[in-house]
Image 1 (cartoon, rainbow, N blue to C red):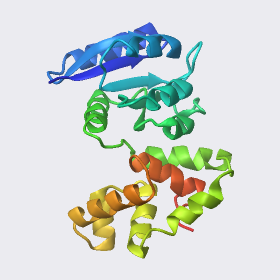
Image 2 (image 1 turned 180 degrees about the vertical axis):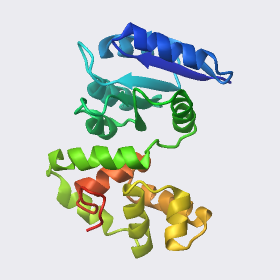
Image 3 (image 1 turned 90 degrees about the vertical axis):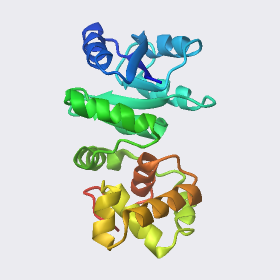
Image 4 (image 1 turned 135 degrees about the horizontal axis):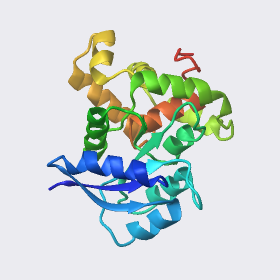
Length: 224
């Protein structure tokens, strides 16, 4: 069954370009479009969607709040934030709101398609270099409220799980973590799964957010 994609962007030309790229894929189908968040929420009430490509800056209701409302629903579609990094100050908030990842709007088509397939399969799209740049820029803006309970939750992790969490937050893939810690990829995957379960997190994106919010990883990618 084809991945059902919804395009949410106030720029018609961009939606047209994305639609053309996706229409050429045998495993993808654009089933809906919207020009702002309000329209997107209305369309989603009557349309089955697997992945939403979400712009951030839109009239009426921005992509961050739209993402938050989508992710509060039962069995919501995955949301992939599309951002112009140098101008957009809301991408990190989009991840906190529940997005499964983010991509730059000028990303090569192949990477965009790969990201859609990844989030549809349950993975989070956290490109290491882009993640570091984004978090390094916005980590100082993170709210400090609620940090104490989150720090207490980290105490539930074993020493090895804490090591793995730090490397995930630094943007390393399972393979890179395995090489760094001299473990098998299967073992790393198991550790990541336990981290998600113990901390009640949805995916690797939330691991990154929590690690920065609690100070486990500093802006600049270094561990505390």
